[in-house]
Image 1 (cartoon, one colour):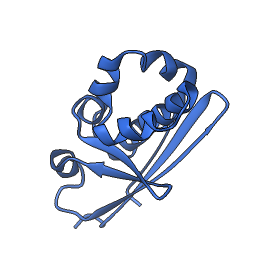
Image 2 (cartoon, one colour):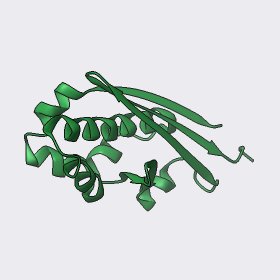
Image 3 (tube, helix red, strand yellow):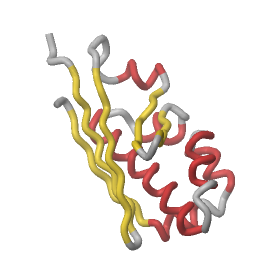
Length: 128
C-alpha cells in the first residue's frame, strides 16, 4: 500500500451546489452526471454527486495529486459498474503520481443521513 485517503461530504451542501449546472459540468465527468441524474429524486442525485466528490478528495489525499487537477481538470471519473465503484484517471493524472510504477486503485463509498463518504487505497510497486 502506498497511499490511503478518506473524505466526507455533506449531502445537503451538495444539494445546493448541484442546482448550478455550471458547477455540475465543471466538476463531474459525463458518466458521473448520467449516473447521478438516473438516480431519481433530488436527494438521491445529491447523494451520488456527494459520494463522487468525496472520492475525488479521498484520491487526492491518498495520491498527493492536487484537487484542482482532478476536480476541475476533468482528470478523474468515478465509474460504477454492476454496483462496484471504480476510478478512471486521465493519462496526465495517472502519470503525475508514482511515475513509472504500476499501481492499482481501490475505492469504497457509503452514504447515510446527510453524509457521503469515500475511502481510496492505492496499491503500487515499491520504489526501486
